[in-house]
Length: 404
Ligand SMILES: Cc1ncc(COP(=O)(O)O)c(C=O)c1O
Image (cartoon, rainbow, N blue to C red; front, top):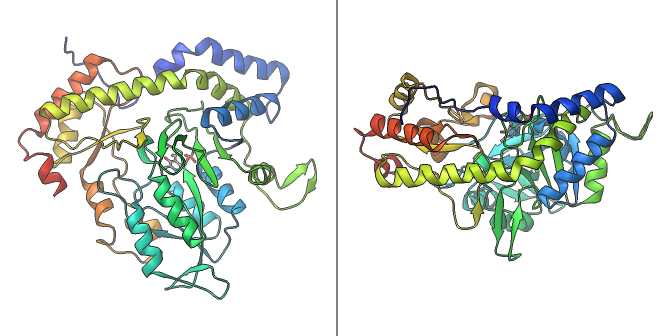
């Protein structure tokens, strides 16, 4: 039965109500032991999350932005370097690059997956870069050494990692995964003939546990995963003022540790993540089916090499403003991820990009709408969202014109 009750874009209340006892006992234990920083709660979660990602190591940090920044620093990125990423991402990806002292260069995304287009990465490296006397790849315009590339697994779907890794290898640059939206996402590697988990593929990977993420803390938290013991050991030092032993500082670091209470909360929630992911995938499948039958929207594209975890379910429409207004009037929450591509943000005006430089990203930014997506979304709610979307967008000319 249809109701006009509110359908939030994201429901953070229900899962916390369901887990209230377990989460409260984590907090109580921390109070009783005064174990607030470091200790077994952090170590336990790190071990569990590494196993979940099928990565050898996990180092808990304060948030996803720190995770990216620390991974870049450990990769040797420093002032005067360049790092490649996409303009179709949350600003934190580029902030971490600047905070490591480097300059961001953007590569446009693929029209169907919305993630880094490996063909454009190759074109950039072949046409906009050259080699210096040491054989390192440098940008032609400013002569900056390119140390790393950060593909972003946007909306919970991994980028085309075989292709990106092959190109990066050819040009001698490291791959750091921005897996902040992709806990548990998988990629079928033809090269390795295996499904690989986000966080297990690159030199290192960054995760965010911001509350709204698929695995979210009850506050701020993040992690770096890596298969390289040296990388993990260096991140451990950097997150803790550059010390491996208390008050013996080998390098200058940061205060970027994972809070022990958040680690405890994350361990509780991690036990439910596989189920929540199944629910998200099932909701996405239903949305896909309903829209395929009738909808004048472009639905997410999941290639056969991808198992996405649907952090967001993003459709493309011709008249986004109308769609959002109609859905809002029917108490249905929506979002836009993201309305302004990074190269068009004021914060990056100094990079000198122009409108038209990244046509796919720009087109997406004007058409995308994120529909309600969270594990507890019911079948009836999905049907109500679909009906409202179909109704709002029915006068438009349909997906073909959106993609044209
Ligand atoms: C793609 C992406 N990168 C980086 C971040 C940064 O994570 P945090 O907010 O935990 O610093 C986020 C999270 O918001 C994100 O979505």
